[in-house]
Length: 105
Image 1 (cartoon, rainbow, N blue to C red):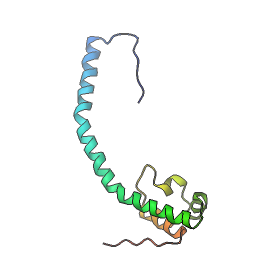
Image 2: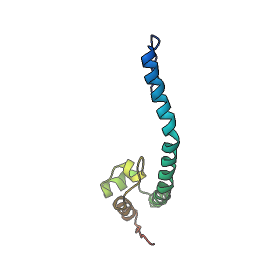
Image 3: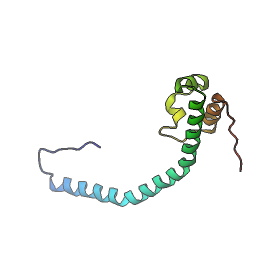
Image 4: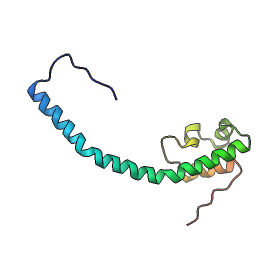
């Protein structure tokens, strides 16, 4: 987050607006944190699966570049960075390392 430094004091009208924005943000923070926690609970099983696929990849002696070339996915997608991987991505990754992705209920 970028810190803003002012070279003057806020005008009274600006201070009211600024304080209103800060209050609104403070009210939203608990809800935003709760939503993030819910997302993390959903994403955690995917992270475990991606870690297992990574272990299979390294056990087979394949580099991330090898798997990326085979699957047509970039390294960030393969590692699940910044997103929950799709079933298609996981299936392609599993096939590239010689495994099958089975989804059971």
